[in-house]
Image (cartoon, rainbow, N blue to C red):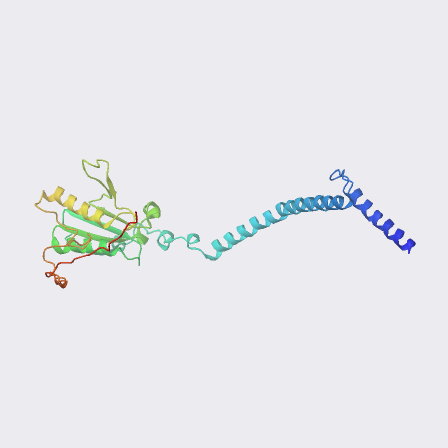
Length: 275
């Protein structure tokens, strides 16, 4: 039995010497315990292995991710998967020849062509306007058909240079007597400016258009007792309670035995405090 034991001990010493030799360049081990030496060798080995895997990930993984992302964006642009990859139709429309029919730009006209206040609404073909903006414009024509003229222009028919100006505004704008920007002398906000470029309600509010119409009307035709357009009439302001509201039914009276109608008697429980 002595020979197998010495052989097993010799084999164990040989394997341990190999571990120490392979780890001699990694970490100096000064412990006299064989088990601790083996743990230190394993920890040192895995530390090197983790560092090697990190280097491989940076060397091959990161370029692969960048390459796949670039190919995905290229494919999206080529096959027009995402909306940002496709230019709007009105921007890529062919240039209108100068000798073409100038009336092709106009979708429709409303009001009096000889009116002193001319409103031009420019929008891409097939794109509907905001409901509240449409309500304001229709109200203007209904109230003063001889004093206003509204022309609806198609952005697709504009010259390319004018279309490029409207790129940031989704191809929409509203001009009143040739102006799209208005500054009002408000004492509280003297630098307040209303720009009617773009679509409502993202770029401007319907109330801004209403204010512009009222101000321009007073500038052209003189001051009036009340504004031409009213927000509450057009249902552009939050509803307010008025005296004409329907009367509510009275709340039922509470009758307590031993008391009069409407009297509520509360009796608190008596609390005894111990001395």
